[in-house]
Length: 249
Image 1 (tube, rainbow, N blue to C red):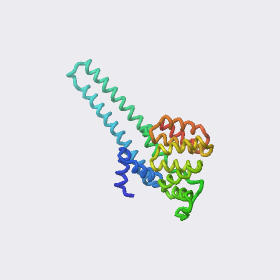
Image 2 (cartoon, helix red, strand yellow):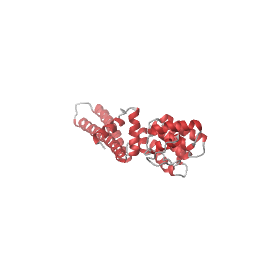
Image 3 (tube, rainbow, N blue to C red):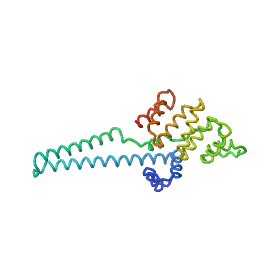
Image 4 (spheres, rainbow, N blue to C red):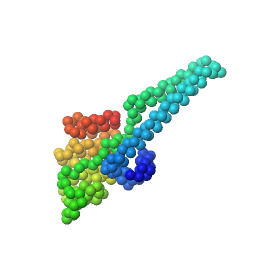
């Protein structure tokens, strides 16, 4: 891992300076490169720490202003009292904000939550292939093999062709995840919506990934709605859904 380059890329990501193609590659690395994901989380914590230190400095400054007002008698008592009240109130607001961040942590943006919770694409449990296999005789086998090998662009292209012939829940699930890995959030969203509307299978994981699509696109209201539905179930996704719902709220 090239630390200097990776740190630069992470900083650009949080500053929204990456192109669509770079974001896709960035998300794929997070899913497949645990050290890189750890670096992203470390950088996020660093940014939050900087914000906390900034609030602390603001509080110290306000306290120094308050002390200065108290030590000077040039202005009238009434004016001094008004200014004292103003700065004391501002200091109190800064203090409350600082304590809130220290106790509960700063709220993460929808995009940051997406990065945290979309750690890997849905596994191909439908037609497993052997990595490196040379069976490319059919479009179908090539599609699943491309997905298993992390070639999400090729997999998405071939899955779309398969869906023109026949809609299948497994293909829709993997296509949605391939599109998410490529940063094609709107396409992924439609894949999961189609899966939920047209099939009774895979509805729970489909809702989970749909909520992440809404989160990625900034549609917090719909993300919250889907997470609430998922959190009311007794499945493996429920705990994650409840945890993420609390952060979205």
